[in-house]
Image (cartoon, rainbow, N blue to C red; front, side, top):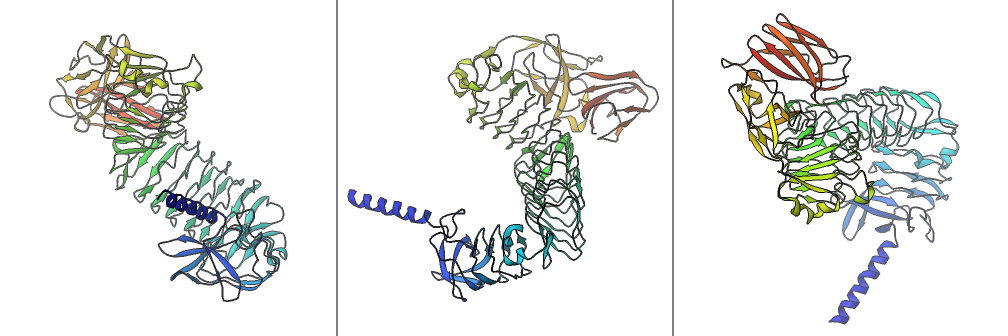
Length: 627
């Protein structure tokens, strides 16, 4: 039996070696007499691509006979009682097959890949069937047809294939009647500043303008396909329109377009692909229309200047509940895209993959007591965060969650049981300078549990906070809110109030407290809040609204969001004060009448709290300032 097992293992290893020795799945002789090679690319629909016979991309035909003569590519090919459709001519499939004198491409083909006929100098003419939707610029380089073309922009049938000769400089106008722009058509044309496309254009190929010098582009309404990487690394691109004809923004489409300051996603787009807007770090505002039903993880990660995020209220898959400046997947309650002004609602269960990745201006964040999981790389490269508080609901912090948070000085955990940590959850201890290693503060009596867990690998100093801290409420002259005079870190404190809360603020509000001579804005849920550490800066979640016993105080604030002047309307306004999210007062003054205006144009973009005192009582409201 042992001998049989050894023989079987040896046969399996021999089979694997044979499999790795070939770049194709099977071969077959076509109707024109040549042996052609195929890879199965879709086992469900039975699709294959034509490929080369050699051992790899850089050695496509060594020791094999290249096809010669008049080549008629098949529509279908059969093997082992299965018939496959030939839908793709793969990369370097006929690379430097110089003895091919002509080629006929069947209507089953939809894609012609990179350098598929490169160097086939015997092919003087070729026709692209109208079934082809993807065609690479390099596919025909070195063919007889290509060599016979003059330098400049190249056209074949209704395709613009790019250029021949020197890279284009300045401006190009694509000929009327052109329907398709080939993949990589003007890739890395860094002196191409402007391109004009006709109304006949229907598709822009993969990487068509990657790394080009475009500063702006107008895409006609006739275009309904924009390929992956189409405008990636266009570092000077400031503005681009996405027409209503487009239904999908593909993978890496605007990747690293770091001058792109605004983008309008039309209400026809249903999906946004992987890293579509990665490192667009001039982008400040984002609106997701109701049509979007698929967002691949966080396609906006690295957009460090994002300030305002809005999801259309009619969207059934995603939301930005309670004006939180984030994108939340409604069904799972996972926050998938955050910004420097995000307020995480107390209904969020997890913070998604790279949700805040690279938010360089994010200095603090309140993680509510509903969050169970902090996913991979959630806050990676948030280099301005100085402290993090982990609520007692968290059970899992995945790998790289807080990696490269280079300004981090303190982590406070309210969890009695240490949450599970993924690798490099807080970076590597060895990567910190000795004077920069953050300290960990835990609840009284929990130090031993953390020292015996993986947390001990990230922190040299683990301290318990067993002090009783003094709390007083400020800014409540009427004495309608009261809290205990002292509390310990992690204590849940119940608020007692003689005032009613505005209906939409019953579960979410903010109380202003004084803790050991420091003033804090503390998030409150269900009329309770968790005692913060005495030197932690806590960013407010929601405005606390007080009303008199006879009902709500009617207050109108518009516009909201605002860029410059905001108008406040309420009956008999007496006093107005405005503070930023850190509690710093930026305006305070007396007022008269039923209307008041304030100009935010000199203030930074962000979230502000407006406190309005009227003859009927006091009310606080939150407003978002954009630029």
